[in-house]
Length: 200
Image (cartoon, rainbow, N blue to C red; front, side, top):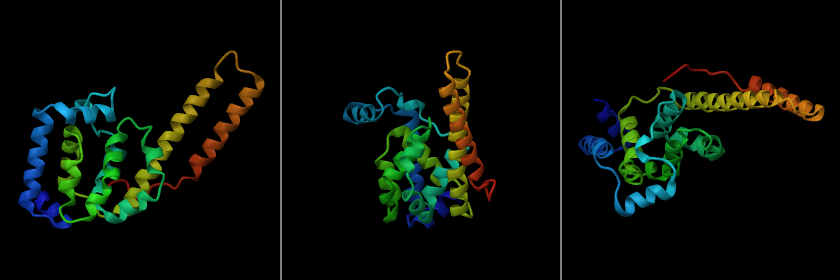
């Protein structure tokens, strides 16, 4: 039922989408990349085992689910500095790859074209997301996820600055500078709008 709903939303044949999902899952589990294709993957992420790619962060996963299913959400996000926001995240690469291939999703059969542009592990993750139920209110959910991602990054930055403040060799000037940076980040944190929706 989920596959049929996704296929209808994307203007695709449900049987074709189901076949693509099953094929992607099988490839992700049983077929390690070889030859030129594997070299292309290594060039993109030389120090990372492709098989370890995952998307367990719930904010990132909901963000990916939303942009895969909503053209409006994708258009809004493409106007943001999405690469800079996603790059620091350990699991942000999958979303970057989705957004890089977002033009595929504007055409009939675009989901298949997007999947074909991904590595086996990325394809398996995206195929799974394509079968999941999308949020009923994609744009507000997208805004909430995007703001929550910024909040997480600000909190990490504040923690790092506070750790630097504990250095025994810190000068008075540097201590004052760190304190001001923390205050600025705390203000930004309070300025970010709170979520409208707790989930999909």
